[in-house]
Image 1 (cartoon, rainbow, N blue to C red):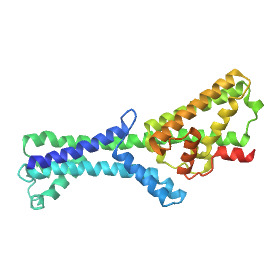
Image 2 (tube, one colour; image 1 turned 90 degrees about the vertical axis):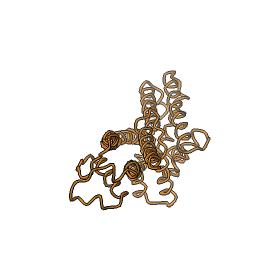
Image 3 (cartoon, one colour; image 1 turned 120 degrees about the horizontal axis):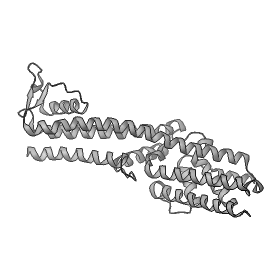
Image 4 (cartoon, helix red, strand yellow; image 1 turned 30 degrees about the horizontal axis):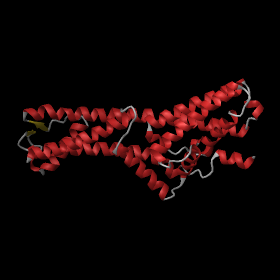
Amino acid sequence: MGWLVSLLGATLIMAALRDLFHTLWHPTRHGGLSRLVMAALWRLARHLRARRRVVGLVGPLAMVTVVGMWAVTIILGWAIVYWPHMPEAFAFAPGSGLSQEPELLDSVYLSLVMVATLGLGDIVPAEGWLRVVSPLEAVIGFVLLTATVSWVLEIYPTLTRRRVLAIRLALLYRSDPSMQQLDCAAGASLLASLATEVVRVRIDFTQYAEAYYFHDGEDHSSLAATIGYATHLAQRGQAARRADVRLMAALLAGALEDLATILDQRFLHTDGTPAEVFAAYAADHGRHESADDNVGARR
């Protein structure tokens, strides 16, 4: 029976490690529990119609919640592994009084010490297999710490790239280039660079899906509010006389369609056209009117 309990603990550990791997290191990052937690917090904030400041905290708080979930699952998993073998399979430091505590409490304490890599030595494995297995918890604790730091360092550059594209589209919307200004070599270069940036954002949503749950703040830095104007530019470019402008406009339209597909498949599930997907994206981020709508009203 004791080995079955230890096996249950090992299952919890493997579940946490699998979720960590799929969230941080899998090429397409299809995290299971972590994605569910982040999506649930995002929907809760939207359902409660929280203020923008509160919604802006959803992404960071969701990351903290996910890391805490991983840590608690790993600690409890190792505690359950130790529990059936406590105290007979362990040696206790004289005078520590730990052996007089409940066995589960001693197991949780040992798991905390091991995962934090403290190595206090007041509880030491006495059986051979535990001497081999217990140091693995310290390794996992170190992996969890470094993974958390790398996750933070990876996610914020993706947010920067998204906001740079949003601000650039907002500036273009303000300047509102005419058809004559767009139908030239500079216009072709502009559309090509926008297509490249849209592709980068599309890849970011694929590899860092948790970035979706970060609110971008003001309208001019929100991709949800400005992406509609990129669609407007692509449509205008496809009506240009120059072949190079039409080609770059087609590339931009294709990049936008790919972005809409990723947003719809992973987050929105509208099964609509790119315009409908972008409208749903704007609404989900509290932007009920996109830049494309503003363009139509302005003209």
